[in-house]
Amino acid sequence: MDLFQTLILALVQGLTEFLPISSAAHLILVPELTDWEDQGLTFDVAIHVGSLAAVVIYFRRELRRMTAEWVGSLVGQGLTPDAKLAWAVGFGTIPAGLAGLLFHDLISTHLRSALVIAVATIGFALALWVADRRGRLSRDEHSINWKDVAVIGVAQALALIPGTSRSGITITAALMMGFTRQAAARYSFLLSIPIIALAGGYETLGLIKEPEENVQWGLIILGALVSGLSAYLCIHYFLKLLEKISMLPFVVYRLVLGAFLLFMFW
Image 1 (tube, one colour):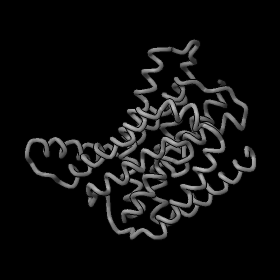
Image 2 (cartoon, one colour):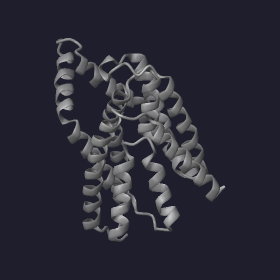
Image 3 (cartoon, rainbow, N blue to C red):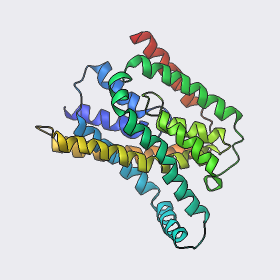
Image 4 (cartoon, helix red, strand yellow):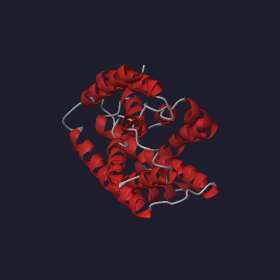
């Protein structure tokens, strides 16, 4: 892996992790379309750590409040809005965590194909468009209830299918439940923290069991930094953008990408 490949893949991860267009799909497709060698598990872990650091830093104030009030709820201080949101993030992670443990090998061996990515990209683009058009778009993330947690949590489990987009499917589900676009995105981003951490931990276990040889640590660190910086900027400007636009540009992008993949690989 050279410097150019490192920068491109790190930018792809950082810019697509939190947009509703599927980072996993792009990280599979970029090497396939460019005929690059596989970047290796160490690099994948590093750029995901960069994305995780970005979302934690961006929401650091909210996370401090949520953590403090979650602890308060455990010692009888009541269920405040931030405590409820913290519980929602925790319970909302369970379906995807279980699905990842049960189906990881099946997905990694049988579903990482361009055709699967194309179908998922198109199908879930249409779902996002319907949710954005028909949702009430009136609730904030602190109004979340257990029905919302269950629906969005199960939706997040579907993101294990390459091309679905974790942020895309959770935002879609939140819009269907009546959240505003910004609230849907904020909850989706908070929900990403434990799931990225769990996925990174799982991949790290694989590295411990079978460590890679000749790791280019300079490029690995650079990839993590570029991924983190680009992810931070992406979160910031995406939330700003949602004040002015609908999800339509992302729907159109997914439809064009899906059609291109069908043309190229079917």
